[in-house]
Amino acid sequence: MTVKVRFAPSPTGRLHVGNIRAALINWLYAKRQGGQFVLRIDDTDLERSTKEFEQGIETDLTWLGLVWDERHNQSARFPVYQQAVERLKAQGRLYPAYETGEELDRRRKVQLSRGQPPIYDRAALKLTDEEKAALEAEGRRPHWRFRLEGKRVKWMDLVRGECEVDTASMSDPVLIREDGAFLYTLPSVVDDIDMGITHVIRGEDHVTNTGAQIEIFEALGAAAPTFAHMTLLVGADGGALSKRLGSLSICDLREQGFEPLAITSHLAKIGTSDNLEIGESLAVLGESFEFSKMGRSAARYDEADLGRLNAALLHVMPYETAKPRLAALGVDLGEGFWNAVRGNLNMFGDVKTLATVVAGEVTPVVEDQAFLDAAKALLPETIGPDTWGEWVNAVKEKTGAKGKGLFLPLRRALTGMDHGPEMGPLLALIGREKAVRRLSGETA
Ligand code: GLU
Image (tube, rainbow, N blue to C red; front, side):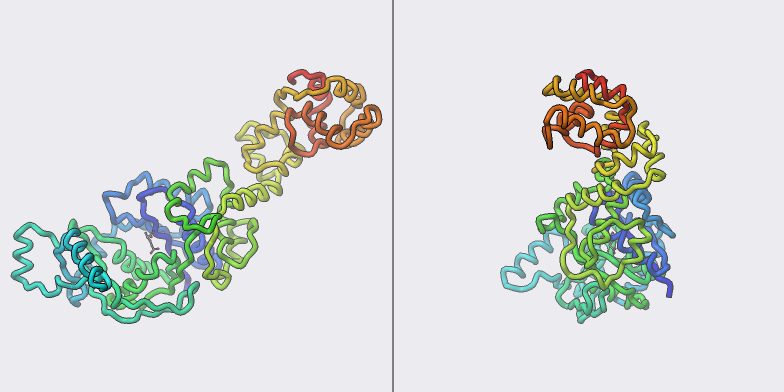
C-alpha cells in the first residue's frame, strides 16, 4: 500500500502555525513512508474563499519546502459530490430539513432547560410529502442532513490509540446548506475515497467529525482511511492558542525573518518525545518522524524556542548557503566575514548591522579618549587574526586596565556597540585604517 495523505486548507485566510503543523506532519509521514502528499484546496465555500488566499497557501507551503505531489480544488468537483448526494438520498441517508437557525436555537434552549442534550430531534424525518411541498411553497429551501446510524464508531488512531465516538449523542450533520453549498464534511470523504487517501492526519478538534465521517465512508461503500488526530497547539504559557492563531501567520513569521527550517523543526518536534533541535533538512526531520513519539501531551508553540532554533541554525550555516542571501542584501563580504559574524545572528538580517561595522561607517562610543590614544599608539602596523590578543595584552601592560575596563572601551570604539562577535576576527576585518580613525573618536 502506498501511503497517500492530504492537507486540505480552506482559502479563507492565511496559513498559521496550526495549519502548518498539520501540513508538515502529513508531509513528513508521507515522505518517511515513500508516499505522496496531496494539496487539496477546500474551497467549497465560494463566498469566503479567495484566489489570493489560495495563492498565499501555495506561497507559504513552497517557502517552507512542503511541495505537493498532487493538487486539487474542491470547487472543481461539485458534480462528483452531487453523485454521492444522489447515492445517499437513494439510501435514505440524506434528508431535507427546513428549520431556520432561530427555530433550531429555540429547540436547543428547550432541550437544555429540560436537562436533555441539545441534539437535533429529527423532526424533519417525520414530514410528509405534502408538508414538505407546503414549506417549499412558502419559499423555504431545505438544508440536507446525514442520518447517523447512532452507534459506537470505533477506530485505531495513530496518536490516540483506540477511539470511539457514539454517533447517537450527535446531531445528524448538515452536509448541504439551504443555498445548495456543500459543507466540508461530505466533499472531504468523497475526495478521500476518490483520491485513494490512506491516512487522514489532522487536529483533535476533528475527532467528533471522524465519527460521522466514518459512517459516511461506510454509506458510500468505502473503507475508512487510517486516522491520526494530533493534540492542538498551546502557547508558551500552556494556554490554548486557538484565539491567537490568526495572528501567527506564516507570512508574518517570514516577514519577521524566521528561517523556514527553524519553523518546520520547531513544529515537527513539539508534542513529541524528541529534543527540540534543528533538523538538517526536511528529509532529515522526516527520517526521525514517528507517530509513536507523539503523545497526548500538548504541543507547545513557543516563539522564544523558535528564536533559539533560528539562531542555532544561523550559527552553523555554511558560507555557501549564506552567500547568495548575503549578496542579495549587498553584504557579501566573504567567507571570513560570514564565519566571524554568524555566531552572533538571531535573524539573518542582523548581518547588515555587522557588515556596517566591518565595511560601513561606525560612530565610536568614546568615554576616555586618553585611554584610546594609548591603545592606538600600540596598534601594530599589520593586523592579522592574532593581533587582537597581542594588542590587548600590550594595552593592559601599558595602562593597567583589565577585564571589562580593558575590553569594553576598545569594543565600543571599534564597533560602536557593547556586544557583538569575537573581536579577533572582527578587528582583522575592520582593518588598520578604520581602526585608527575610530580609536581617534572619528566616524569611520
Ligand atoms: N479544511 C478542513 C480544516 O482545515 C480540513 C480538515 C481535514 O483535514 O479533514 O479543518
